[in-house]
Image 1: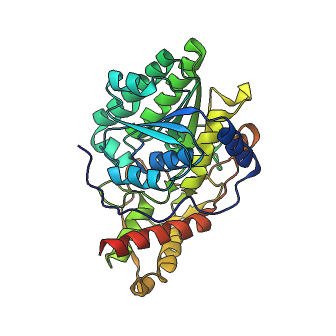
Image 2: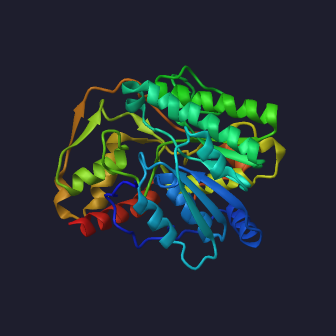
Length: 363
């Protein structure tokens, strides 16, 4: 059965900002010539944002999720946010480790956006078997089902964690290091399988190496929640926040609207050179955790004045975490037409408003 969500329905639709030129063109083309899409992990954070955008473009969308980490309310919110668009949505409750469920989901589908995963470095260190079963074997099921159904292309979520101990900054797609966690190993394996499936079976594949994506519907609860929603929830609850390490660890934080854009551009790119590899999905902007905490705290003051004096505590650095993360996004610009519509400050403004609204509704 679907899990009960901690979220209430949000009144917000996709944030109003001008779309980059290539993405504007692609959106117009999709509206004129709708396709059939599968979104795995449709009830999750990024998946539900993809569902909403596709429905808003009048597409036919199939969603697949087992509600292990996603929420029915995310789906409800996504469908409600696209009312009147002319799109249609069909949901299959199922697990990507079930090949029959994957075959049902892929039936009649043109394009697959694969988001389903157990996405956490600490979780993978605590339970490497589950991470492998979902992220590797589950991904293989999706590739096989897409091949058997004759889907044109599979766009899949990879991760910046594949850079591991690479010394080059910014990170460039061709220069990866040794991976530092079981989670990173699963994503590196995904990229190998995807390249093999394109070469062997002709299923076009594109990997997207997400760099710390954040935004609305990102769950602040649970042992492995991401840093932005976790800190927002703690600050709104007047609870202490914690940084692992000295706080000068940096990340290239990327608002979810950028990830949505990258998926749709990757799925529709018509340059043969655009498939068969992976792309960084980020802003090309480095932010330390200390600076991020100050940005979140200062941004929340307008919603809750008591956070103004909040400070952060420090704990030992975590195993498997990389020190610096900064993406070179020139490959995506060149081959996909990707251009971030939201920088970190833009995305935080939208995300903090969303979380503050959810907090107020929940009181």
